[in-house]
Image (cartoon, rainbow, N blue to C red; front, side, top):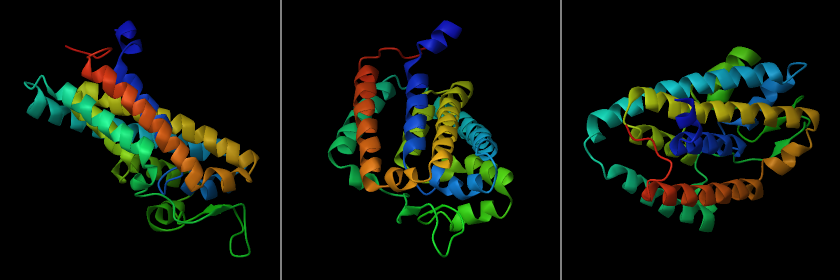
Length: 238
């Protein structure tokens, strides 16, 4: 079982997409956690709480998606190839036109501080769910943001959800999207620690240029995964 998990391509791909998801400066990722993290002496607490929340939320949704896939796709052997072809097409689009996939992301600069803000802030991070979560305190707020993370519209969330549906099983879906959430949580924790130690990084990481780099990297990763999927290499069958 452990050897199978170590060589399981969809599981590894889900973790990879989760890591890339955490890197993108979107309005439901690490930028909205910056104010929560800077209110404490360490960013570890909010980062860990977010990681726990996103892992639980992702695994729960993944289980439901996998069960749905089992009920509707279990007798359709061609679905894996379809997923692979879709990944290749979307991957090429991410590489060639990353700005097309900007939905749900920040629409404002990140600043260490200014006259209106006594703490670092990013774009619209003080609005909507982020603001509501912040009112519940740094730890609980970070946990709630993680728990609801998969509900936000984002290309990488959709990719992870597709992998969970294609897994065609409740447990497989939980493992697949759980790996996505765990990887996202770990990378978010690292990002918060980096920003905490050097708030000047905010201006460089929360930019269209950085986002485009991550999206294009995701595209390359998606094309590779799509090709391996089409040729049924490294996939779980059982």
